[in-house]
Figure 1 (cartoon, rainbow, N blue to C red):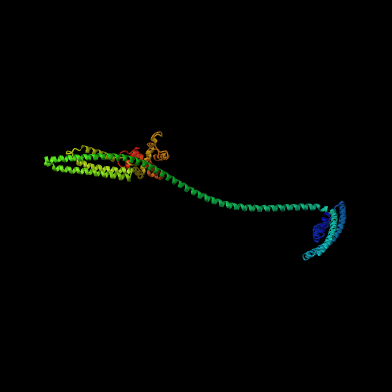
Figure 2 (cartoon, rainbow, N blue to C red):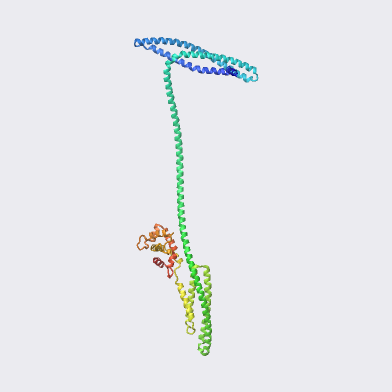
Length: 516
């Protein structure tokens, strides 16, 4: 196996392609060495010429110079010999180049033959043999040339040590220059990198500036949105407070209306009882009228002059009964309709008007009754009329309604401020442990009521109003609205304290509020 491998290797080395490659490598290796040696010899000859021109200063130097001249002559002879050898080598190299060209031509011809005659194996084997022979000859010539080159190198070693120092210094200078060039390249690269980074940083800075401007714009928009939301929240809170105040006021008015409805039902039952008693009294009066008629007839028979008086008496008695029946029907219908439609406070007002009309009619009838009171014994009827009159007068002198008080608060700003001061005085004068919480602010109105009272009183020792309406409106118009909402919320409290006053007026309202 090893022999076959060696044989295949030799066959490959004898191929023309491989032989041409070897010759090219040999020429590339030899040409720089030859050039270096030629340069070295030229420098040596120049140095020798310079040494000839210099004159020795003393005898020792002259002796050394003569020795050096002898050595230089010897070296010159050697150099000439070597130059001759080099010329021969150059001629041989030229011959080798020619052979290389010829081998290239052969290679080109071989490739052309291979391309043209691939099918014919016999021709290929012959061309391969010829190429192997030429390759073997070239290898032999290359070996001879390498031996000659090695001999020349050994001969030149003695001359090479002279220029080693200079070459070393030159190499050092070259290395230093290369280092400087490398550093320069690195510095230029670093400058380019820094310039790229600076440009990237500037681009990032521009982007950051744009982002910052965008963020500022968004922040301004967010601030505007937050302000709008806060304003909406404040408006919503104010509306919630107003709705809560209205709701509480409505609940209070509803409670008052419920109480008035209960009182009206009680009064209605009382009036029904009174009407039943009035019907009984009417029946008794009819009986007494019949008896009076009979007595009148008897008196007519006895006294003819009394007949016109009796006739007038009968007409008066008949008109009285009819009027009472009609008044009862009107009262029953009026009370039912007003109770169904209005209810609460308005129903009590309708009932009051009905009773007042009934009292006026009762007054007229009572005036007519006084004309015949000597003829008919009607003590019981007179007593009932007097009782109904007293009831009507008592109902007429009723207390102030919560609606009237709220209307007064809506029309007068100063009255609302007085009401808040009055509530504040009552709140401070009533301890927290008292069982009646209506004498103090409710827990959800305490902070607002105390703040408004402190501002309106402004440190007055008597805890009375010292601020004017214009001064309050100039500071904050919403303070008047808050005072009005508190006053309306506690209007039932002022209504309960009103007693039996006449319909509400501004002076009466101020009097009530100051009394609180």
